[in-house]
Image 1: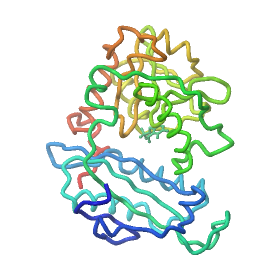
Image 2 (image 1 turned 90 degrees about the vertical axis):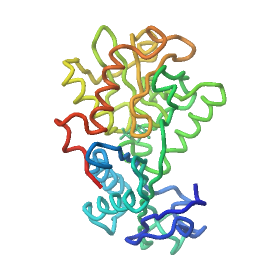
Image 3 (image 1 turned 30 degrees about the vertical axis):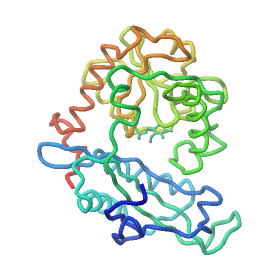
Image 4 (image 1 turned 180 degrees about the horizontal axis):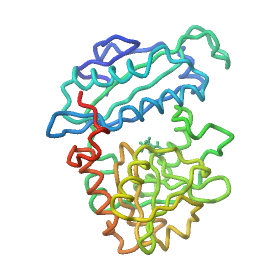
Length: 305
Ligand code: PMP
């Protein structure tokens, strides 16, 4: 990923892709205090558009606030940086990665006085859990790792260090031959995937864990809330147990990278019909209509670059 042509926005300037480097004594590299976003831009009839740019940018600022990092840019500047990166790299559709980190002025746990940096990169990235996964559903394993407790790391911040937990869970699940991990909270209730929010459907009602289970407040999760309302589906946020997922009619993961990915199995137990369920398919299709600009009701969620 580091050896290619293109431009990366770094601290207010566009730099050549291969020159977008930082020092080994970067504070964030040692102690993990940093925050990032995952954003997607899609091709629409009117051109390339970033999906829910404002919400992603606000979440980045909120993540930084929770980490007590003061970003030296305004929301508008960071939005413009993201548009610029998509334009400059001439990407029709892509994934965007804004990241903020603490500089290398000094080490020691306290980052006080160190410079806060920000970069935005973008590149083409297809279906995160595979095209096949989008159509047929993926196989998931309940993780032996517990999701972050709400007062250990801050779960509403998309922080760099939170992802060690995700990496461990994902590696464990994929090493065992599964596609993704499902993590439980410290009380044993279902929280989320390594990089996705979870939804289950039972008797026509859509359920998702409430945020007290330590799940990230996903922007795709919120998009699903709107879709459920449009489709006349009842949606309930509540505590969900692992066996409720086993006996659900349908289940799916959501995320900017994962989009809407059906789950066909959890812990080798088939969920419902063992492939993408009919309601999941409707929700997924409504999702792709929205992100690709085919639903005028949500035109305000698309920012042309
Ligand atoms: N949970 C975790 C742990 C994630 O990494 C992500 C991806 N950002 C999500 C949920 C989904 O969030 P979003 O829909 O905003 O991408």
